[in-house]
Length: 357
Image (cartoon, rainbow, N blue to C red; front, side, top):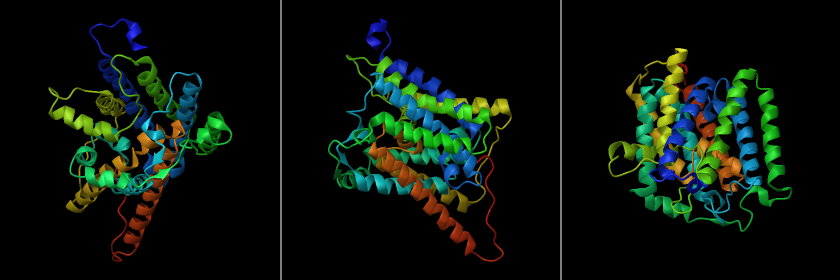
């Protein structure tokens, strides 16, 4: 469709960066205001309210994405989420690692990106380490391990998504959305918060349609993408240090937009606050979490946003397995931390939550 616009000096890739900047800015603002975070929805002290926000966004993302598929604007038949051979070991192990890592760092990658824009230096350092490790897993010294784990597959044939099951795509999309909205309605969140969560979820199908339909250029195609943070974080890192040889893409614009949006939102609301590490022990825990998320996010095929908020709306079984494994890893890691705190010296108490996390 893009070639019909008549642009001669602008490519679809260049426009996709601006498009991603706008989407990222909106995501940063909405996520900062709603405290959107999958970890909080699982193990936070306010998990019920946090889950209501996350599930509202998911419901809208699912309905919007499948509506776009039904309209014929986009399709996922050739997308990596729909591979006939499911790399079950890589996804399961990667999901468990990512879930454990997000508990150690007190936030998934999307939440840490928002916190980084809000003045949290812990989050920015975690993102830096995460990006380096993710790139090493994609293309560096850890790539052979990724390939070996990815070679353990289960053949799915044509049953690569829920749409292949009885009822079809719209029935399964409706079931997911209705279940999510019922929980959200009972989560105790105000209407304004749920509305912002819904707008955040709407960004997912807007991104799919924008990159897969509006910006589709048959002569110079770009990848159909939506919100994600694993590969984009690595892309942003290397664009930052080698911009003259590595052009910006959708992922680079997205990460930059989220940081800018969160910064603007936190400044306007008065919640911007410089924060850093309290001790070497805390630093070590956060760095370990960053490494786990870097490796895990690549193995699982995405983070809580890439595989979860954007992946589940495709109805891909791979994406559903990834987000379930991430949840299991997070719950198990939090249980292990709780046992560790309970078994420590009697004079030692469990540390309180870090501010803004």
